[in-house]
Image 1 (cartoon, rainbow, N blue to C red):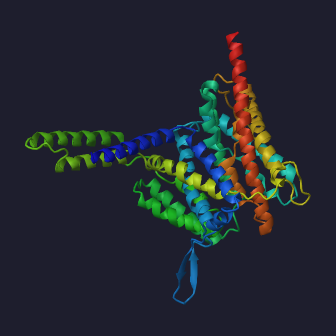
Image 2: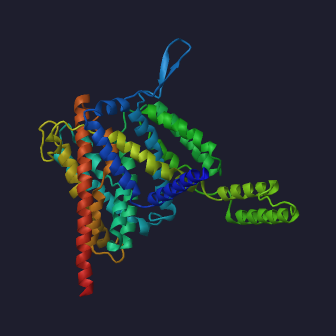
Image 3: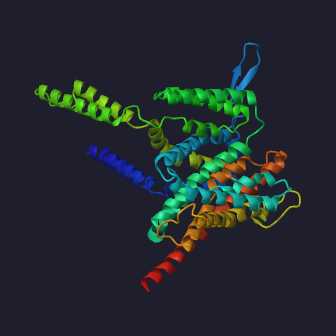
Length: 472
């Protein structure tokens, strides 16, 4: 009788773990969690009894104070708070996994050949340029002008999640097209952040970082496959980027392109060693006829060697992408949303998208129109030009109406848009900077929500029309 509660408890844990795994494998799971974190962050930042705690927590100092021999001290990392820890350290892992994904797609995926890559890449360029132009025209010469990069990004998690919910209403070719477009879009967004949203550059530290990057590249070319030869330089490169003025998250992208993509052992070596150790397992099993224990000591050694050879036969980049994926999707990104989506809204002016201040311009209008109009129109126009000039092929079994409807989902900016917003308007006074960034975050959420709803409705509407025509 006393064992029954223990059995029930263990069974409950197993059922919970099964449901957790099933939920995490859904393509829309990350989007649901991110949306929930946005709601929680907005509540924490605006409820009277939580907002002070929320802001104080984000501003908590995490820097280490190191005392020097002369009695003075230095702080490392400088100005590190909970919020900057998430944005500068944890987001480096996010950019690292994005870099690994882009590199994988460039080697063997949707960006692996000119024919495959050209159409989504051209579409991605159009989807970046037009929102930036719309924002720049609206805010030219105002305090908000530097935020032109905010509406240029597409959030792949939300976009792909909505496509999965819509199911067979969207042709498979368009799902692949939007995924490849979002990957190319991420690469462009990374370049935008690296080039336009860094601080004042310390070229001495940057030069040291470049030398170290070249040394790691040489190690890669020489065939070095051991992880420590990449992990330790990655930490040093991050610190050099952090102090040099280049945004530290870019070190993650750089290291993603330096990690080996070839396995330590080739296919022939793997098969030879696997058969060798399997034969040894069988031999040990025949010898140890007096025991029923499996695995015994020699067999455990063989199993460990098989596991080691199997691990070494998978490239380091694939292993890291697989290992970091769940942590990035279900921990780092939700923490980013909790830390950055909590905007205190003091009055309804934050929701007045079409209000233009003569001095500050209109962050809201620039972002909202950029995401809702600029992204889909830029993607559709660039795709049309690519097809007419025979630079790319129209996705199979896709109509222009459905492509435009799917392009509306490209207006879901969220993660990268909020990230660029946190880097924008640094030339303004602290009070103005905070106001512009808060308005930007609110509008990114509004614009992304509207783009998702509009895209879903248009896809459903176009699918119904096309199904009616095919039935007739």
